[in-house]
Length: 197
Image (cartoon, rainbow, N blue to C red; front, side, top):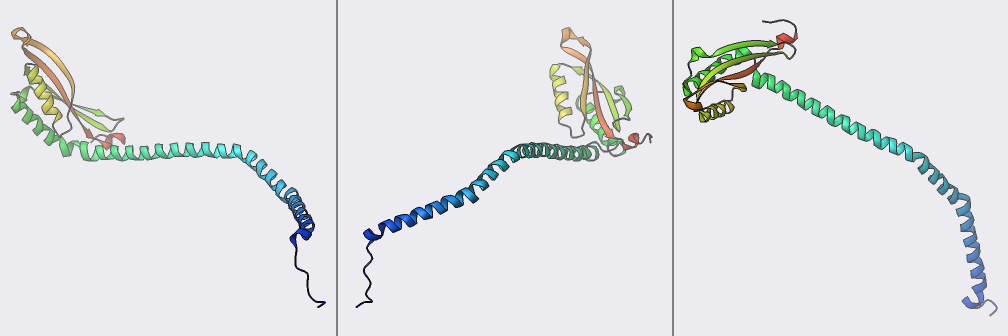
């Protein structure tokens, strides 16, 4: 039985196994030193070199975000302004009669003589607007003034109170004579072109 192999004994082969493991570790260390370590060093250098660029990129991204927000706000503001001019202000031809009817209703509600209302028109060429002002004489106490202000504020005809001037008072200051300047604005795009129609 010359062909019979001796059983493998780990205790006898321990030296060879240990030597093989040491050789593998040395090879692994050699590969790490030769191939991996330079790559780690290159990666570290790349990170150090790219850090200022990354910071500049982050800063630029933040600037772009601010610019995009500004642009979106500008576009929304432009759309809102266009809507205000076309839908709320309209032109004098479209809204003047409605405003005059609203003023007539206010005059009737607060016993104001329509003939005593003074009207003025002013053209604001740089803004492309027509200002239509009405000076309304109102008599009464502070409660009457408060009710008048509430009536104007609840109107959907875009009228604003620009000025309240006390004229004189009667009965020891209980009855007041006031001149209230109401104004509304009409879109006048032809003024921006330098002409007036």
